[in-house]
Length: 293
Ligand SMILES: [Zn+2]
Ligand SMILES: [Zn+2]
Image (tube, rainbow, N blue to C red):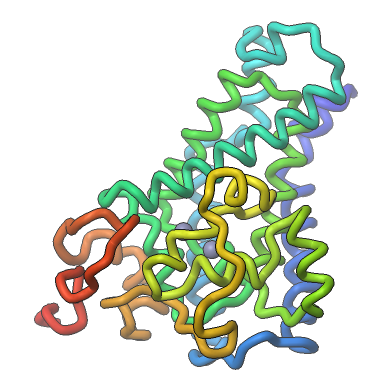
């Protein structure tokens, strides 16, 4: 059995093993060295956030049973994409593909903040009133499907090795749990790590209620894109203990922390201005004051 066939046969098991392993490590780390005091009972947030993860996993397996690695294998058979066309060294294709896939995810993240309709989907990720490892996996099912279609398109154009796609998926999953972790890291260690990977303190800035802070640090995995494209912000103004997490106008925990509320979130309120560069919160989707429910 060659490596590609092995990956195709074991992709789900490999990803699940990493998910469970990394989840356990980060969850234990959160108990031993928490960064902030959480506001909402953990049992409620975890049940609902992980319920959404289970729903998304099921949906993806039903819609795309072969997943992204299946798309890479299909592209290879068809001769689609740059690396299936060029005769590049395997390791070069592997490294470049992981970096390019990460850049596309970064770009997609900027786009879902910039386009009002897509921001409605993405605000499910931001509406969590606390910030811990389960926030990292909390996305609306429509955004998850959209994300997979963008990944498929990228794979068709890039033609990455099947292994690169598996490495990328596992890496993204691992770093998302790590950088959403409610983790206290020594400042010096954070500084060093930040040159290689997005750290919890770096991504937490992105979950601030403050508009300019939320529209910074779009990276999930590699930290370079934000520095390169001018969206990097070092720290939140109010500090990590003092900052507020979430979105203006969506502060009711009965809605934003429960699965039905999360699923309905994109369909609530009027379509308003761009989320990026929003400067006036007095005319927003101020739902808690205008919603008759
Ligand atoms: Zn975001
Ligand atoms: Zn996030």
